[in-house]
Image (cartoon, rainbow, N blue to C red):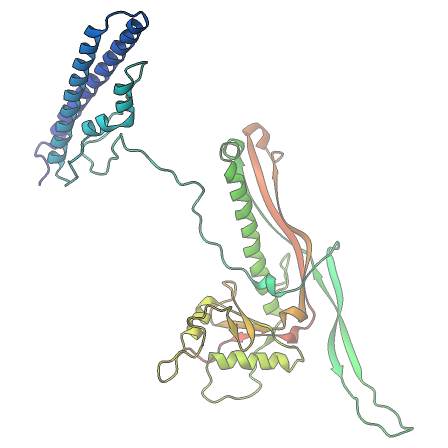
Amino acid sequence: MTEHPNHEEFVKAVRDEVKTTYDVLDKKNNDLAEMIKSAMEKVDAKADTTDIDGRIKDIQQEIKKAAERADEIERKANRGRGNGEDESKSVGQRLIDTDEYKSFVQRRGGTARLELKAITSLASGTARNPLQTVQSVNGIIREPDRPLMVRDLLPVGTTNSMTIEYPREDVFTNSAAPVAENTLKPESNITFTAAKADVATIAHWIPASKQVLDDASFLAGYIDNRLREGLRQEEEDQLLNGSGTGVNMLGLIPQATDYAAPITVADANKFDEIRLAKLQVRLAFYPADAVVLNPEDWAAMELLKDAEGRYLHAAVTSGAVPRLWGMRVVESDSIAPGEFLVGAFGLAAQIWDREQANVQVSTEDRDNFVKNMVTIRAEERLALTVYRPKAFVHGPFIIPTP
């Protein structure tokens, strides 16, 4: 169907008809309520209600006719706008099908009012029918959180200081050797460096109105969780990439040893490079226990196939915890694509919590009190010590993915 040629005039005419019909329905509903009230008063007085019963039936018939008229008006509107909507159940039909209307007729007592909201636009096929209800979904649909796992790899201690100082071994010269009786024993040597790690503060805040938090109690918990998640995301970035300048932590990657393959492997691929990095850590006398990869690189490695199309990685359907060469695989968005970090996380570094993640709310911030606003602040304080930089190997993949 095409749109009515005089669309605007048609819409105005239909809107006027709808208003008139609804006014009639509204008046008839009021008349019916008054008749039922009068009937109940006569029942209480034990008077004859025959005439009122007949009048009630007449009004019900008039309401039914008005509803049918509304039905015809909606069909006319549908034909005029030609949008192919289902005409099987109109506004009028939905009116007499409502539980409120049926209960009102059956009760025949008390008062009631059936409200029909005005239709704002009959020209738009997207307008929601005023008799339709809306179902709300509890809670807030939020963006997913990044998987954060680097902290899980490291031992965690606590401190009351602002700076962690520790002696770090630089060079160990091992001169141990068999010696003859009554001869001078060889001398070995160890040199140390006084290293330190300052406690860094990670924090952020958001403003919120007191009324919003009062009216939606779940929102306070939601904001609390989101602020804590923001701290964890920044912590992940600092633990891996912190530059050590200004107020930044000195992360694992800046302190790690550059990757240099200890041996040559023919026809090497990315799996081989990770194994060679593990060997490099082992040659520093530490056992590597984990590898951090960007999700893109880990996916590319899992999808590698041999010449016969078989996956090189054996965990296609197992769903097991990702492991590579016996090491735990940690997917982190904080490491750049094309890079990796292999290390002895459980032995060669440590996190020191000065103040664990916490969220505080205050009205005593600027003009919050007079504006009924609150400031919600989340912060944590921690330091990272890397005892053995050679126990971490970082580098770009040299061999491209086929």
